[in-house]
Length: 364
Ligand code: ATP
Ligand code: MG
Image (cartoon, rainbow, N blue to C red; front, side, top):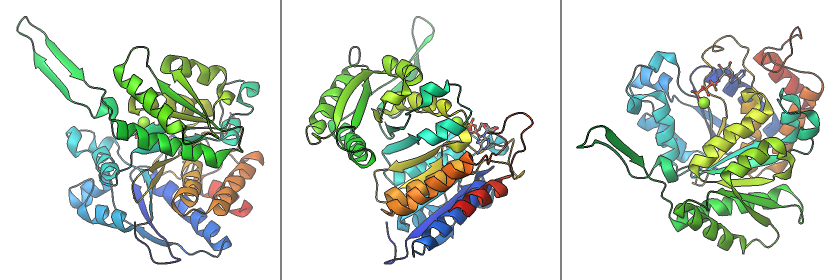
């Protein structure tokens, strides 16, 4: 990714639905945190998803891809919505984001569940179970079951058959494992660093390769403790004792499921950030989608996107101080009772997107 010295370029892709509202909130926070650290960010903004289909007939116009390639980092809102539901699958808004991730080579998807987010997010778990929760799911994003050979065909004897293939190559496992172990090194002091690698090695050949490869990578990280968990066990442990996890490393399929399970622990989709890493230009976006029911009403929770901006500082700009500053401001705002409608209880006054953003900016 390119950028002039000292002035990193961040490409904003607001997208559809509540995307533009939450990205604008995060842009203000990025700017403020940068300013506080004597840094200037150059912002640019282009269309993606449904908005790009309407304007340019393509969910990922060439100009958007070009700008993304030249940026230091991309901050995305969300894509999709009912207006484009009737399009064929490969021309829908979501396809634009898939193509962007592929073009940027983003093979590792990272979804942190910080303790403070779980604590304020209306989690279905008992408070004592949430104490000590601070985990992150690292999901392989460009291989496995979702990309392997597939077919569907008629059978002579009647009916049909269909299959998908869970295929991994050593280098695909190695590189995402390194992301997980490198991440584990940045999160906790020596002695507390743990990677839980998730597989189904008692049944799947691809999981045996997964397990052996992860074990080999782990040898380069003697300061990080590796454990292997079957995915069914991991799914259970996540709700029974989420505090036992630090970094969870998974393939594409298991990660899809477990990262949504981890998100459910937070109680609201609106508070969760994500990062997609691996290529020269990382991409940051909230976990939630375009929430068409809230679009244009100014009530969406901006926290997921604002915390994604913190991840942008941490992983794209290498600026831990600015990242931590944003996270502390969000935590403080939540601790002081600032709540958007998705977080507020019955009868509690809920803040609009702008008010929630202002509450966070004040505490920066
Ligand atoms: P997609 O198909 O884009 O993945 P989804 O089915 O996962 O979307 P979302 O759009 O993410 O659904 O959101 C589901 C519901 O959760 C929304 O309709 C909305 O009510 C709520 N929600 C999601 N994001 C937020 C947010 N940032 N603030 C408040 N509520 C939200
Ligand atoms: Mg969804």
